[in-house]
Length: 415
Image (cartoon, rainbow, N blue to C red; front, side):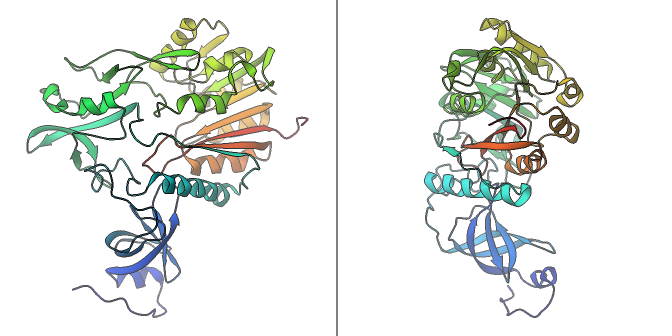
């Protein structure tokens, strides 16, 4: 029998929560990552799959000295923006966080959460210039990683359940581009006796797609995608931005308009540095604006594609360095014209941040898929740089994630 909610007794919060099974809360907002934020007796309670304004009966799943986590038992009164999720696997699958919210509510909540994360962690006040770029909410995702396992019907493919490694077998996924979603239907039967624990699928332009590791009978090798004036080749082993329709906007906000339409391109000279360059997504358009581009990428496959893409697009000024950024960074010269960084979710490690502050490029562009680590890094970089603008791009609709492009300039540079 569930213990009833009792008035506060003056005990510590963790002890108080440990006495309870279920509580009633009202969700105030969403935080970065997509969980709802509520309070019980003044202490934060985080509730996945909730909506701003929800009044909920929740079951406590985690007790901590300063906060608790809970799962929804009953929606007593829904908040504005709630809807039925489109995907039949949403309740169990860990891939999406926000399908229960209409898109306008999602976007508004994520913008607020990103601003609050920057302020709370990095003490970053939002600059005057903030641009928000919405994304196509369905059928946008160019790549996915499927987990494989034995189920009651034999080999199954799908995603891990939320908060566990339990496999949720799927036959559809509405955030994938149509060619990848179409590949899910019947995929396990094509895999045969494959012993892989996971398989990566990546799409290019048209109906092209490819898999890794190679599987007999499934598309293999590279695909190509046009972004603006450039064509990029890559395969399923490489990182490539996931939102098909928003990649051109991401490139423009990171690098600048094509052919220096803003009048700021340093076409007569100067060197730009693209760190964590991948297959050259930013390197190629940078080469239209600067005399020389140094692309630094530690992954063997991605760096090989970056060289090929530069040659295929006839950009002789792109030099690709196959080295980890943290081991290369000491070679960055002082006062470089432009440095672009697009690190993984962990952000910039200490020696990279320190070197950027010492060498002080005239312009630093930080592209991030994780506002919390971005906030940490900007909090340290702001001693040497001024944040000129922020762009928030919704590269991951139906999830709690937001892509951010921060444009920084040397504080000592003339404005």
